[in-house]
Each structure stands twice: as C-alpha cells, then as structure tokens.
Image (cartoon, rainbow, N blue to C red; front, side, top):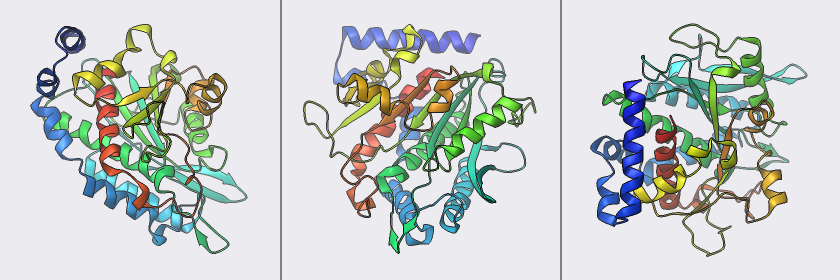
Amino acid sequence: MKIYLRALILTMIATAAWLSAGSDAYAQNSVTPEHRAARRLITKDGLYKQISYLCDPLCCGRGAGEKGGGIAGLWLKREFERIGLMKMGDSYALPVDLGNGRFGRNIAGMLPGSADIAKDRYVVIGAHYDHIGTLDGRLYPGADANASGTAALLSIAEMLSACRNLGISHGSNVIFVAFDAKEHSMAGSKALWEMIRNGTLKDPVSGKAITKGKISMMVNIDQIGCTSSPLKSGRSDYIIMLGNESLKPSQRGMLNACNKTFAIDMEYDYTYYGSKNFTQMFYRLSDQRVFIDNGIPSVLFTSGITMNTNKTYDTPETIDLEILRKRIFLIYHWVYKML
C-alpha cells in the first residue's frame, strides 16, 4: 500500500510541476537515474539488429506454423531469458492450435511486481511477431508489421527489468507476450485468452491461475516503426493510441503527462486520423480484440498503416530508428506510470 501511495503522490507532483513550470529543464530532470540507466539500454543499433534478425531470410517471413516462424520463436525465447523474464510454466512457449495438425507458439514471460501489492494484479503487454511468410517464392519481411512492435516489446521488458534490478518495484505483475498467428485471425491472442478462461495460465511465482478478474489492462503494440503516415501537422515524430477511453478517467491524461514530463515531445492522437469509423475498426483489428471483447481495458499503440504494409519492401531500412526509439520511451514511461 505504501508503494502504491508513493507512486500516486509522485505522479501527482510530476503532473502539477509540468503544468506550472513546463520547462525543458524540469522535463529532463524528471528522468531519474533509474530511468536514464534503463533508457541507455535501448539504442538505434540494437533495435536495427533485432528488426533485421526477424526480417532475415532465415525467418522466411515468420509465417505461423512454419519453419521460419519457429526460428523466430526460438530467438524470442532466448531474448526473454536474457532479459530475465520468468517462464509461464515449463517453457516460454505456449501452444497455438492452427488447425489441420499445425501449431504455432506464443512466447510469454512474466516480470513479477512488488511482493506486497502485486500478488493478484496483472498487466498484459503484447505484440505479434508473426507475418505472412514467403509466398510464391517472395519474402515478406514485415519490418514495420510487426518486427517493429516486437522490438518495442523487448525494449520495454528490458527497461522494466532493469528498473526492477535497481530496486524499483512495480504495483502489478507484467506478462509480456509475443503473439503468434495474428495473421491467422488472431489465433495466438485467442489461444492465450482460452488459457486464461480455463485456468491453465499460471503465475510462475504463486502457481495460482491468472484469471480475468486479475487482469487490469492489456497493452498491444502493432506497427510502430514508420513515419510515412503522419498526423495533421505532418510531423514525423508522432504516435497513435487507441482505447484511451477504456481506461479509468484518472488515467486518461497520463500519456500527455508522460510526453511532457519526460521531454518526449511527440505528437499524438487518440483517434485513427480523426475518423470515428476507422478508429472503431482499427481498435479491433489486432490482438487486443479478445481482451476488449472480454471487458479488459485495452489500448493499441501504432504509427498507422502505410503503403509498405504487407509488401515485399517492408524492410528494416524503411524504419526510422530514432523515432521508433522515442515512441518506445513514451510507451515505457506511460506503462511504468500505469503499473
């Protein structure tokens, strides 16, 4: 309880300070030594290497249930282990039934929260790592869709794990999931929800089932690396967050607060390019959908559909690594405040 109250008080102080001062100096000073150390772990070179691996011909476009998807999944398991996430049972890999005797695998791991207040509180953070594979001999690398989101997922896990190692406890347990089979009618996220529904997704610390009532929020990251579909101003440094209205009223201003408090200064929108119909449609087009349908507050972070989406030229070279890094930092600070 003391940790929760301390976090709440710090958030209120930070928000009040940027409202009254609004200075760049204050914003830079708000990045504590722990946050600064965590942010230093995320480099443009590191992001490029992660995205390039997932887009390499070795992964064959990461088709669900295919050899290339399996290679990508094995690499993600090693990354989860390196970061220090706990296995969800005997393995990081959770099966996804694709039908006709074919299986994919979600890669899932947990970062425990505070032992005092996080026993029955969970936040799920996800990004799908599969893509459409190799068709008619043509490789679809899927750099933006969604190697970018997968790299962001790993980065946020790494930063939160680093903070935990520096002694900062979180108010929720965090389950990180690299979803398979999004391109197969979101079979991966549906398979995870089925585990939650039937009580087979277990907390690796307590051994207890992680039930619907214990999940406070789902965060999904899908296509976060490009700058070719800007918002109204035309700036390249922008981000779209859908689902803000699903959060508690007291939480709905947190993205704006983090954007200013931590000197990210990124243009953002809570709609899909100002269209109510497209906002409603895109809010349900990715792996957050099953959580929305089951009443879990859910948000999607994206930089939008582009002319490269699902094309053979969606390559690592099209990713703006500096903007991707800024987006990751904003999502990280927002998640940190929401835990």
